[in-house]
Length: 377
Image 1 (cartoon, rainbow, N blue to C red):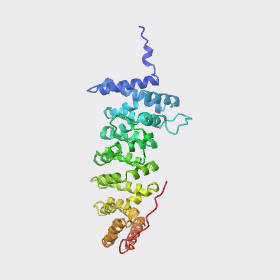
Image 2: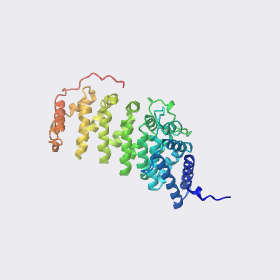
Image 3: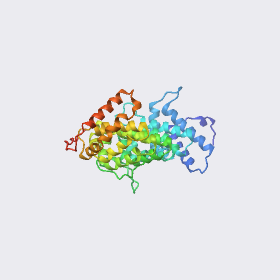
Image 4: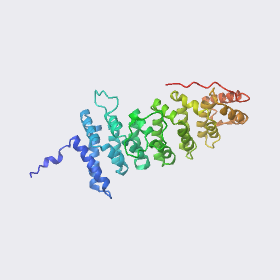
């Protein structure tokens, strides 16, 4: 057989590049100990792919090459291999994997009639388990940040958010079929989404911080979808949210979760959720306890939820009125000295004065109020 030295430097085609990466990934995963030669081959393949998808300062990106490589990656199922094995890859390879997968989820061919990128369409229809595998990247700190970065790119698309929210364990191993899901039916609480509470509350700092960023993106970006989900899963969601996040032992988790709670409840799309939330006396008690926390920023975030969600609500339930009226004297004694170090914050002082006035104006006893009409958005 003739030996052609020039073939050694021949640039691989996109299908060859995708196939070779899949093969080296399989080999790398099967090896009990890290093999420097395999690591080098893996790194080289990922770098070549990153160059095709991102270009370099010397090499411009070609949309045709991007399209060809992404199509080959999908054909060889490489994205699933990467999502499931990213925690085992060397540090630089994890970073390259994040770039490759994020680029794939971002790319749309020029003049494409599809609203979503080709990789998003393919994942939704054929491989939704790629999205859940990325979520489970939060199980390990090695994969938390790269998986989180890819997830937030993918979550720009509502169909991906639906995969995370409506994921359910499936004994027969079949992937989630969004077309046959009733979005207004409650979920079991055993899908991948429900793991975010523990990843945020119990994970290492870098895991918790990244998981919260993804969690917030998931609950605030696609408003119509999330409103339907919260309406259908109101009791289970807020029971978990209040117990695990708002009452967390972690200062950072507690503070940012109170702030996010206010954002969710005060969003116009979640009006029906807010009215349901403020009817429940136990929710008011949880928020009132925040005002007496020994950490000032917890007091501050709790104050805003207390004022804007509960006290300023003109249609308070009998249960909520009873709690507020029963604590009126204590509140009027407590609030004037509340967060006195914010005397120079004019907006806060105005809001505190408004809150005190609203409490002073509470009726002597609970009285029926007109219940708000549910809104459709």
